[in-house]
Amino acid sequence: MIIGIDLGTTHSLVGRFGKDGPELFPNAQGEVLTPSAISLDDQGNVLVGAAARDRAMTHPESSVSTFKRWMGTSRETRLGSHGFRAEDLSAFVLKSLIADAEAATGEKVTEAIISVPAYFGDAQRKATRIAGELAGIKVERLLNEPTAAALAYGLQERMDGATFIVLDLGGGTFDVSILEIFDGVMQVHASAGDNRLGGEDFLHVLIDLFVTEMKIDLNALTRAELALLRTRMEQVKSALSTKDRITLDIDLQGKHHIWEITEARFQRSSESLLQRVRAPIERAIRDAKLSPSDLAEVILVGGASRMPIFTRLVARMLGRLPLRHVHPDEAIALGACVAAGMKARNEALEEMVLTDVCPYTLGVGVSRDHGNGRRTEGHFSPILERNCTVPVSRSESFNAIEDNQREILLEVYQGESPRVSNNVLLGALSVKLPPRTKVADSVVDVRFTYDVNGVLQVEAKLLSTGNVEELILQNTPGVLNEDEVRARLAELASIKVHPRETQANLATIARLERVYEERLDLRPMLDEWLSTFMAHLESQDLAQIDRVRRELDGALAEIDTSPFA
Image (cartoon, rainbow, N blue to C red):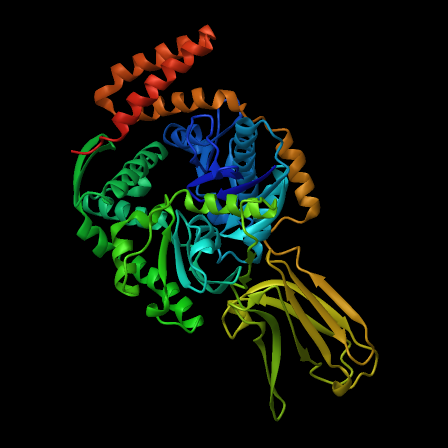
C-alpha cells in the first residue's frame, strides 16, 4: 500500500487514495490530526501525538514539538537520557502514522509520498527522506506542499489552461507557489517562501504582548508555567479568528492575571510578520512574470491561514477572495493521497504530469580577475537559477586562474547572494590537473543536474583529457551520512514506543493532568475523574474503559473550549 503523509510542524496526517477518493486515517484517539509532538514517560518510553502534546504542560523537560523547523540541521534535543535530532523525532511521528494506516486498512504499508514545503532546501529534503528511512519506510517521492494543495482542490480536473497561486501558511513555514495546468501537465512557474514564518511566530507576538503589559519576566517562569502560557495563548490566537475581543484569565507566579486583546491590536502588533508574508508573494509573482489579475484562483491552506489578518492581507494584495472550502489542516494530506493514487496508477485518476521548480539558485564559488594582478575571491556563479523547471540539466565552463595549477576546487553553493559567504555550502568537488597545465588548457565543463526529488548531481569534465569527476550531494552539512543513519537506526530500535492500543488512554491521562494543572477551580473534580479512570484501567474491562474515556474526553473538550471570560 502506498500512503500519502503530511509531516507538519504542528500536526501530521496520513491517508491513501481509496475507491471513493482520498481518505485520511484516524489515530488511536479517532482524530485525523496527530500533533507533531514527542514525550518520554517516567520509564523512558516514547509517547507520540496528543499525549505528548499535553504532557508538555506537566513534563516540559521531557517533551518537544515544532521540531520540523530544525530539519536539515545538527541541532539535538535532550529528552531524559537520550539526545534526538529532528530526523529521529520525525521518525517517531512517521511510525505512529504508519501504524494508524495499517490499523485502518489491515494492509502493510510499503511506500510513502511525503509532502514538504516548496521552499525546503537540499539539506531539509534529505533530512525528511532520512526520517522516512529511520521509520522503516521507502519514501517514494517528496511532494511540494502547494502542489499537494492543488491536487486536493481537484484543480487538475477543472482548471485546464488556468494559472493560480497557492499560499500555505502552516505552523512553522510559509510557502507560495504559482502553478499552471495545461493539457495534463501541472507546472510550477515560481516558488517562494519563508522557512521561519508560520503560526508559531504569530503566537509569539501574543506572548510578547502579554508579558510586556503584565510586566512578567519570561526567564523567571518555570517550564510548566511557560507551557501553560503557550497553551492558553494558542487558544487566544484561535479564538481571535472568530471574535473581535478576547479576555484571558491565567495564574502565573502565584498571581492572577486578566488580560484583554482585540483582533485589531493583534494585527497592528503583527505588522512585521505581515510584511514578511508580502515579500514571498510579490517575489513569486515577479519571478513568474505575472500580475495579480493573471491569476484565476487564490488558494489558502495551512492551519494558520484561518487568521483573518492573513486573509485580509491576501485579498488586498491579489484583489480577490481566496478559495478555502477544503479543510485547511487537511488539504496537504489529501493532495498527498491523490499523488499516492497517481503513483499506484489508480484508474479513477487521470494521468497527470507534475513538474516542479528548483526553489533556490545553485552554483559554484569563483575568483574574479580584475587585471593588473588584482583578483578577488568568494564570488557566486549561478548555474541553475531559482524557479527553473525540474528535472533540469545545465552546464557552464570554468578554468584555472594561473598556469601550473594542480587542481580546480569546485565548491557548490545554494542561495541568492552574489557572495558565497552568504550562501549555503552543499559540497565540494576536486578536479585534478596534469602537470604544467596552461590556463588555456584547464577548461572544465561543470554540469548540474537536478531532479524532482531535490537531488543534485554535479559532473565536472576536464576538456583537455576527457576525465570526468562526479559528485552526488549526499553528505550535506547538518545531514546524517549513511554510517550515522545506521547508528541512529540501532539506537532508535532500543527505545520503546508505547503500543498504538494504549495511546488513547495515555492521551486522556495526559489531558487530565494538563487541565488539572491549569484549572485551580476544578481540581477536586478533576482529581476524582483521574482516580476513577485509573481504577477502570486496572479493571482491564476494555468496553468499560472505552466508554469512560469517551465521556472524559467529551467533558475535557468542553472545558478546553470555554477558557475565556
